[in-house]
Length: 245
Image (cartoon, rainbow, N blue to C red; front, side):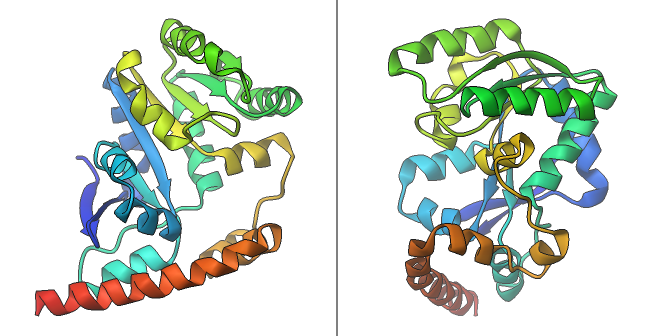
């Protein structure tokens, strides 16, 4: 069974139930097609409303996974199915564990050279049964992009995890889906940074309480101005709620 998809202020979000996690992973990797998984923050949800390409990307993604507490709260306010919220790091580690249990393969793309070597080494130690069939650093010349896509297609990995230094971010996957024949593609630079040792992971307790925004705010103080967009989101919820009355 595919995870239920709901519309939240016109943006699609999936409800991946905890008990369906592994079976969903197996289904995606056994179906030899190209699938994209997107981690969706509240800021991303707001951004999608004003970015047609990003919205199309979400609509065509196999999984749109909420990461911000405001998304399930908004769904509850609108009396819709409340989607499960996941910490990206925990999601990816569980995803890779499921791949390892079936002897699946992985390709790593992005990050700086030493960071990528650290990621590969750490993943091999943690998931010795996971086959890493290729890797390529980020911040590469634009002219190399086509060669990288060909390399990924030839390696035919079950999953491609993408970090920083790839032009287009999550939309890189959406724009080049037709260049691949199969695989699950995930853009998650924050998780790659944690695995490489570049940054620390927030505790599950902090994440569950919805306080994970504060460490990000300390690193990027300018994000305080996003509060205006969050007020806009609250207004949208009220408007959508009134429309349903």
